[in-house]
Image (cartoon, rainbow, N blue to C red; front, side, top):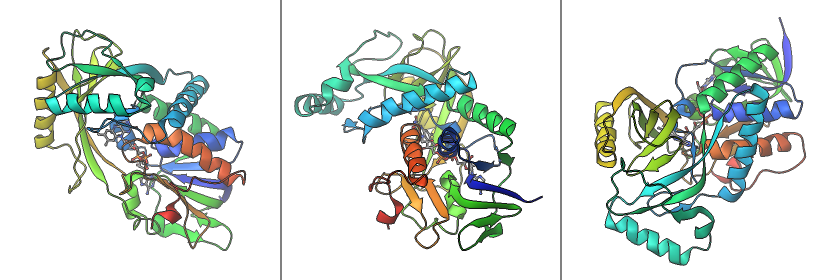
Length: 348
Ligand SMILES: Cc1cc2nc3c(=O)[nH]c(=O)nc-3n(C[C@H](O)[C@H](O)[C@H](O)COP(=O)(O)OP(=O)(O)OC[C@H]3O[C@@H](n4cnc5c(N)ncnc54)[C@H](O)[C@@H]3O)c2cc1C
């Protein structure tokens, strides 16, 4: 049976979820295709939106706009799905060595945004080893990504616009002003495949710099609830005494499976940070679709304006995707332009 729609979305990680959500909100017609595998980068992610990151204690790119927009969007979808998807929280970050403390003092003296996001340490948590002091980053968000993606997939299934399958690139016909995929004719296809882009013949040669990441889910009794801790490794609350411990980074890898050496690294860091017993329940891994210049890659293919990409979310998919998915949908409606920094035509 032939079907027609305006947009085919390939992939339902956080990227495809947000693109399809804003298409739905704009009243546009679409079909999402995803194999619904148990794991993808968005499900392996900590789901943290942390405005001040890295060894250099840098304010995240455009976070003043991205974070409030993300909060509003996740609350809005949570309202639609009847689920609590966001925890408004803060990150208690402890210095791991004297250089961290020096960097903190340097940033405090030179950065005019510092007081907007940094407070003196707001908790006294005896279970975290605190020999060198630290500080609190606030506000921060924890997004319950699996609940969001599961709930959104069920919503799409009820609407009749979710196909549980892998998209076969060889089956795509590019017609003069539209595309055909098997029995579906559409105006455009928007690829949101995360690191699956490596198999996409139209977009795989963009300047990706993919990074494998691993994390643990552990049970810890006795930590103050709903607080995020960072000492060499993140301890992110998942509820009921469960914590996400992450994450690692590897730019040279041969698969996306959990590895013994990264589990050892994570446990070593956790033992250094925490003086409570813990039990490992799960060890997970995935590949981040990161880009050399650390900016998303969004826009049409240079030769085929029916083929679009929404990718390159790197280490920050949860903060970047609501804002830029909304921007993409505005552009598709002919109501605005994409920011030049994310345009894939600028990245070649
Ligand atoms: C260990 C780790 C920790 C992280 N922590 C955070 C964090 O705390 N905060 C944060 O913001 N970000 C974090 N990230 C980064 C974040 O996970 C990514 O930025 C984000 O998940 C990318 O989303 P995506 O939708 O582009 O890709 P994905 O989540 O990988 O989704 C892509 C989807 O497309 C599907 N797909 C691929 N190919 C096809 C095809 N041919 N046909 C159909 N479907 C296809 C896949 O099955 C998948 O479901 C972390 C990543 C890792 C690995």
